[in-house]
Image (cartoon, rainbow, N blue to C red; front, side):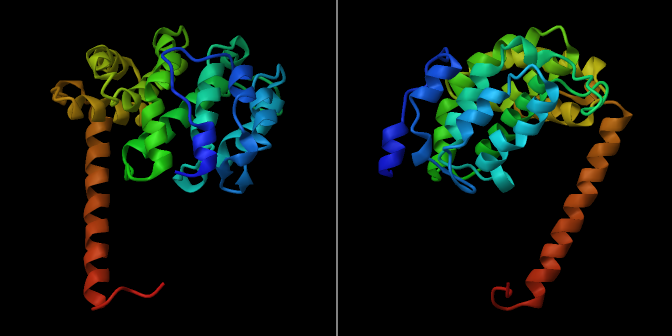
Length: 253
C-alpha cells in the first residue's frame, strides 16, 4: 500500500458525512486519476449541485471521467464515489433538465450519478480483487448503499429504477446480502412496468443470480435480447478460436 493510500484510507460508516467534510478530509492532490492527480476534483464535485442544469451537465465529465476512464478504477475513485453518494439527497439533482441547451425531458442529474455509481459497482464486482482500488470500492459498498437505499422508493420511476440497478451490485457486500430479498421484490415490480432494456437486463440478471425463477417475468423483448446476446457470445467464441488457431505463440500487438 502506498503512503498516499494510507493517508487517505478511512473507514466507511453506515451513514455518510456531509460532502464538505469528505472534501476537506481528503488529500486530493495525492490521489492518482487517469490524467494525473485529483486536485481539480473538489471544484467539479461542488458544481454538481449548481442550480443551472447546463453547469451540472458540463461538470459531469470533469468529476467522473478522470476516476473511471476506460472502466478502470484509480486511487481517487472511492473518494469521488463517497462524495457522489453524499450528494444524492440534494433536491436540485432530481429536477428534470428542461433548459434548451440540455434538451427537453433529459434525465435528472440524479439518474446520471446513479448510473455512474452502478457502472462502477459492476466493474468493481467483476474485477480482480487483488487490485487495491477495486478492493477499496468493494469495502465502500455499505456506505454507498446507505445513500442509495432511500431512493428505492422515489416518486420518479426513472430515479427509482436506476437506484435499484445501483443497489443490486452494492448488495453483494457480505453485510448487505440481507437486503436482497427486498431488492428481488423490487426487481419483479420493475419488470412488471419498465420497458428499459438495460434496467430489465440488470433486474433479470440479479434474480437469476439469487436463485429466483424468471421465466414468468420475461417478455418477448427479453427473450429476443437473450437470443441476441447468445449469438454475440457464440461469435466472440468463434473469433477467439480462429485467433488462437492462427498463432502458435502469443499474437503480436
